[in-house]
Length: 89
Image (tube, rainbow, N blue to C red; front, top):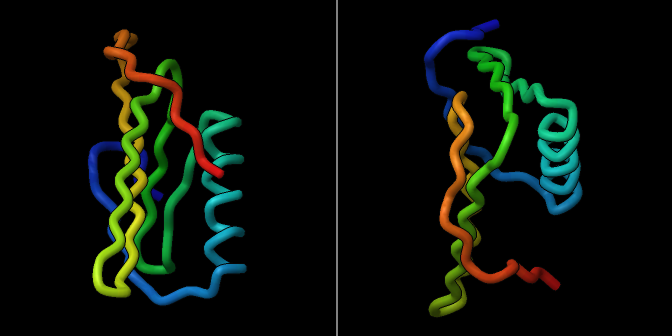
């Protein structure tokens, strides 16, 4: 388990059902304030708290689709600039 500075990266092909389960686990981890990412080789523990910046990017081109979700936070409190409310349907 790695609680200090570090990074974690993983890429794999998943079914919609398994991606849904992974996103639910991320949601649960954010809710409890501890998110553990691991794949059997590496593990990274993060502690999301306070305000979290959410970036969403979506592209569709020539039959290829992509959604990028990025969440960032610092260990000190800061107030980011606010855009309009995000809507996902």
